[in-house]
Image (cartoon, rainbow, N blue to C red; front, side):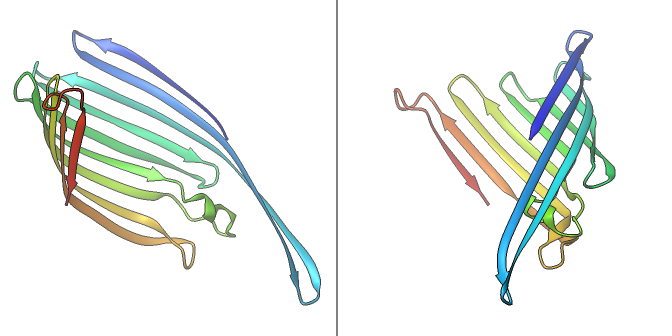
Length: 195
């Protein structure tokens, strides 16, 4: 695999910023199977290559000194998939105090099928995930506490039985995270819980 990335940032006003970026990957996979069947030997060899490119733009826009909006999109193309997809993403964060904030986020994400499926006669398409997340956190020099609820919807998942994108699913839950660098001298510990 060969990979390259570039990101360019530009400030807007005192706090806001816009970022542009691009990514390119060239991958090459090859497999060979040697076998013996009905008294004769055989050999199967297959090569798969992919030129994958992605571009993104996102902006952090401070609506007030306490309220920031991050909005953007990512476009992706794979020669294996022969399809261009666009993923919108956004979040809003509000500072409750100097060390606390609350935020909500939405985003779509695409992923190529697992490497094992690349050698099938019909390569399945992109898997898709749509995320909805809300969290509240407080961070100071010695402690971090965060609670997050999420719902994630999955579409076009690869079905291992027939190598199609007929699978679907969802995940939902609550994550709680606590980190403490002060209570026990010389110890930095954290505890997390997921339901």
